[in-house]
Length: 250
Image: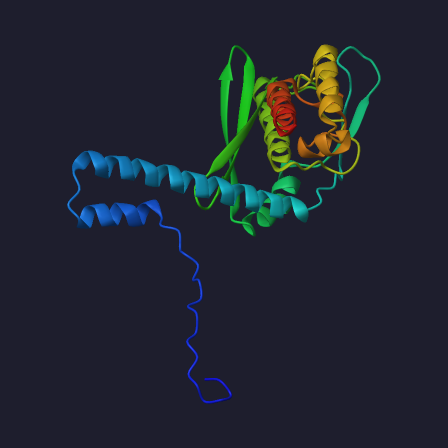
């Protein structure tokens, strides 16, 4: 009402329109008696929508985890005498328990959890670490190595040592973490990228203007040449995708 007592008509305010989800479309189709083919198409659409939402939730959760990452400190000392009578080898490392006890609770705060699966073929041991969000989306990283024949381990201990090592480093790799301190307990165990592969990555990093430090941090390695060979293709694809995106934006 105006100051003169005249009723003034108010313009209706635009109300935000809520997006209709595939599940709502599916329910409407069921209520209207839609045929089976249409219902199946809508069910497929719903499944793809749920998968997309789960993937986005996974990315958001992992980003939040990395924004305030836990610190894994190497405190355990170990060493062994060379079988050939050479100098004794000593190193410092974080145990598998050290990594899990720090990382698992931090992941859980963001609805993430991890697990491993192990396989053997032709004398090589492969460990895959899977990171899963509570909404169902998961991603995985695999590393492969031979049995750890250092020291005086028996065959079973050699396999167990490699599995433990690979479990540690696949967990660190998939979460984008790196243990503090010198990374010196991997020598001879996991195959690293070749000099040619290193040059390929460096060239792509230069072309895309990616910060090499952030690249290493993302893959959980202190230096590019310490990237496991098993992760070369993944790193290369990521940089090539970045390059295509930059070219498309021009």
